Image 1 (cartoon, rainbow, N blue to C red):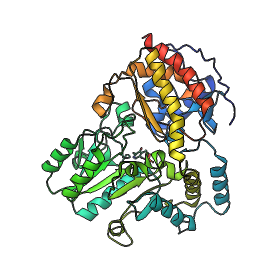
Image 2: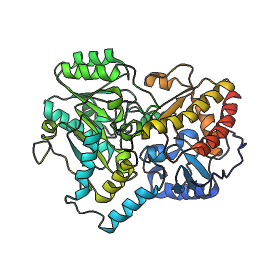
Image 3: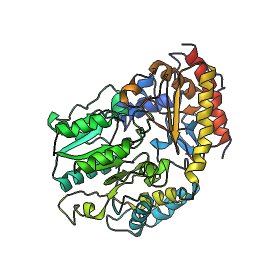
Image 4: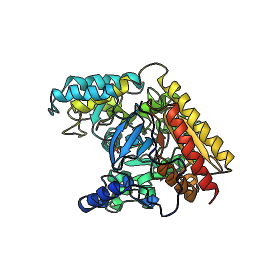
Length: 449
Ligand SMILES: *Cc1c(COP(=O)(O)O)cnc(C)c1O
């Protein structure tokens, strides 16, 4: 791994007006704003919430990214999760180059698709067949169409603060991006679409039970993030996922576990294996494409048989199962398939999260930090966060000061307090040292508020 060379001294002071990025990033972002709405192709990238413009990233290697002004950062966003082994891992890059040399896509079956499907089936005991798609949005949207097709019911129950992509009927209390813009619903979504979605607090089985009672006999599915990662990092309470399983079985509704983020991040087989809960359908994405556009949904064969061309539930995609994406995903997953991969990474990540907790305590800053596998996150809160209401009650001024100081000291975090953070196998003790040195400054700045 290249040695860190923080482009700014570790003592960079933060003031409310200090620009977060250098002149080249500013100029490139100004140009992008002329031709792209808000200058970004996905809203949270815009750094609106943190009162600045984003750095324009020009390259990444291992745990580090470099921006247009040659500032370097330890990256805990990792393309929002896919990069389990850091940037430009040689094995993943080689797989992509080899696949690309054979043709970028055919819109016809290719050998790798069944290999990736088998890998997912082997990893997830609840999956017998999968359909590959190109985004997590598509995976969740299609899984719920399938759930409605299979049950003949209409209503979907989701949780406040959980994000399942930007399909119309799922943009209800949808977490990070929406929370960041204080826009719990999107404009352009007809009330009639949203009316078939019921949102309840995360970790609240009684609320799910009440929603079932209210829509007696018409609930097609409950969809849930098994670890909420789109309202910050919020782990499932003991019994929450098993309780959802019991309720769905009792009500003849399907349980859809959205592991687009948690999938190959927390364990081989996802959070559902750790919680020992078998959903009817699983959504996957992010990590299974290794940084390229691959996602999937899957479940039991009889359920998947409702999909065209076997059944009447239609779902399609020009780029679905793209051979270059599939090659990247397979290479990414292969590196994680070694026994002990997740426990050893979680141990390494623990040095970081324990270090952050210790620093916060030393500076007298109320702080909650947690981790599962290679997923982690923190809140400026004096009590553990269990749902969107408690996440939203965290100290956002403290978060903003922390974020800005970390950025100016070469640590790249998601620009919203309602996002999870990630760790990769390319991160190690040098990155932890760099991060904790920055955090020492950042907690001091928070304590001074
Ligand atoms: C990112 C994410 C999605 C959406 O995936 P895209 O590829 O961005 O469409 C869906 N569900 C969860 C849990 C996610 O984290």
